[in-house]
Length: 262
Image (tube, rainbow, N blue to C red; front, side, top):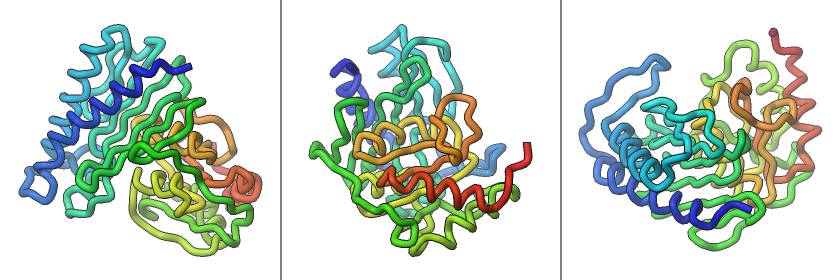
C-alpha cells in the first residue's frame, strides 16, 4: 500500500512546479540547446528546483532523479523521478500539450505517477492498487481488442532510430489511423479512453516513470515493445495500450519489422 501522504505530496509538488511554469508559458524565453537537441528553458530549471526542494525536505531519505539536475541517492528504497516540462517544444511554441511529470518508484518499480497540465488545469494521478483519477474523478481506458480499430499516437516520427522504424511502421500500417504530437499528454488521453495505443522510443526514465501508474491504474498496460516491464536500464522503447488485450497483436506488429540489432 502506497502511503497517502506520498500522493498528497506529489500534488503539492505539482502545484509548486506549476507556479514556476505557468507564468512563463507563451512568454519570451531564453532557449539553449542541449546535447540531445531538445530545448531547455529557465522554466524547466526553476520548476525542477522547486520540486527537488519540496520533496527533498519532505522526504529526506528518498532519492531524486530529474532530467535537469541528475540523481541524488539513486539507490534509495523510494525514488522520485521528475520531468519538470515534458514536451518543451510544445511549451516553447505555445501548445498546451506539455506537462510536469512526477513519478515515484519503490525498489525500482513505478508505483505512483502524476501528469500535470497547469495551463489547462488538468491533472492525472495514478497510484498502484488505487486506480487513476483525472481532476479527482476515477477514469478508465476503453475497450479495443483489434489493432485495425485502434487510434495510434506518437510524439514525432524522428524519435525512432533507424533500426526501430520498420517495426513502428508495421504497427502504424495495422492501426486505424495515427495522430502526431503530444508527449506525456498522449498517455493522459489514452487513460481517458480517447486513444488506444501509444508507441515511442528513446525515452528516458523521467519520460516514462510517472506514466506507468497512470496508464495501468486506468486499466491499460505500459511495457516495453516486447511486453517487458519498464525498469531502470530498459532500452527506452515503450508501448502503452488502453486495452491490454491488444498486447500480442501490437508486439507482433512491432516485431514485424525484423529483429533489432544488438
